[in-house]
Amino acid sequence: MVLAAWSIMMIGEASLVKTAEHFSAALPAQSRAVTQFAYSAAAGAGVAGTLFVFAGAVVALPGFARFLRAKKWPEVRRVFVVPLVASAALVVTTFGLSFWAHQLTTAQRNGADDAYSAVFLAFVVLVIVTMGLWTRASVAVASRIDFSPRELRWASGLAIGVSLSSILVVVSATIWWIQMGRHASWFLQGTAPGLATSPWSPQLVVTMFILVLGTLSALWGASRVALTYRPTRFRAQ
Image 1 (cartoon, rainbow, N blue to C red):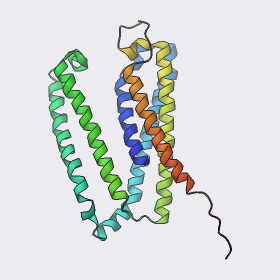
Image 2: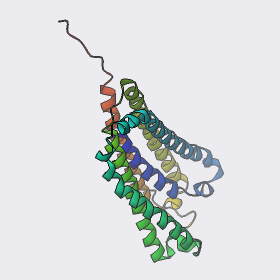
Image 3: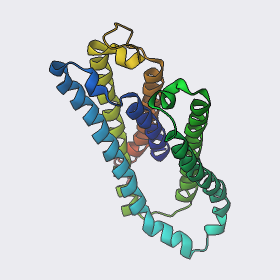
Image 4: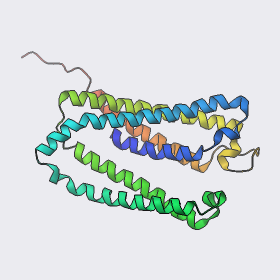
């Protein structure tokens, strides 16, 4: 559950990075420090959460090796076919889109070219679908692995770490949003510099919704982990 939640968080974080691109140049010098700190904290928490996920994969390696030795790979082999095809399509699309982008001006890459914008949105959808397929495949394997008690303790601790990272991402991103809304709301809307506008940018609202959804999902998974830490009372026989 936490692994799936972090996949959702990665989508929101990628959107946040795109939304916040070059934000510091839009801020007055006196209000830049707090905003930059909040953004850096969100980025740091994102990196920490990703490292926790990678650490969880390392913890699962011995169990995965036992899974392979037990000749259970045929049970999940078909699950990996579609993710591999999607990944191949993503690689080809990435090279093609990159080549196309180098032929366009900055304005065309940022919405002036309708055809490029449509293809870029399709590319984003392909990225999201590919991530979802690989997450599904990973969960399919993990659900069939027989973890040792020690491996489960490590994995559960890392899952809680991912959840805490998700909370920090949301809190930091919210502070960043508030600061940008106070000092450079025009940046969030993409309007002319200095123009007073609403901080409720549709793109940022969707981004925060995705981040909150991922965090709530991670917390749900972490709460199930935390319940396993309750001491068990044994009745004397």
